[in-house]
Image 1: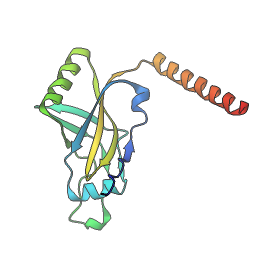
Image 2: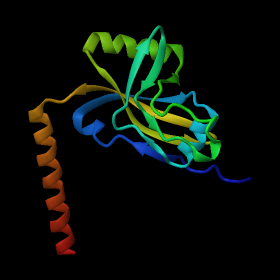
Image 3: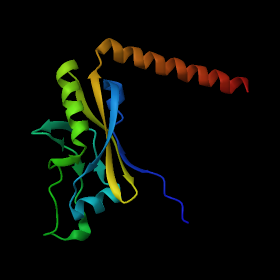
Length: 155
């Protein structure tokens, strides 16, 4: 029996964990057209400016950029930054809505990957960091880097 391939990361939002304290994560499917999924598999996607919004009991990914797929021709193209529906269970959506209202949280896309045959997005519930918290993160990262350099020199 053939082994399952590992999850293939397509795009990551590197600034998300720097700008937000991520409290909870969810895996969601994406509703994509044919040219979009082909472009995603070719790794032509960016989510650095993307955000998630819950409207009418549905989750939507806004402002995620998926480049046009040239082999689709001029008539089979998609809009690059259209809103895309996220596939979550109803209980997950109600949990997300409840947490957003209670604690004033933001939903941030963290990474997009291919799992099996399907494109998935990892979204996180996060609370925005203050400027002082961001500075503390930078200081901690620099301290860790210095310690790893010192350990490397000793060995």
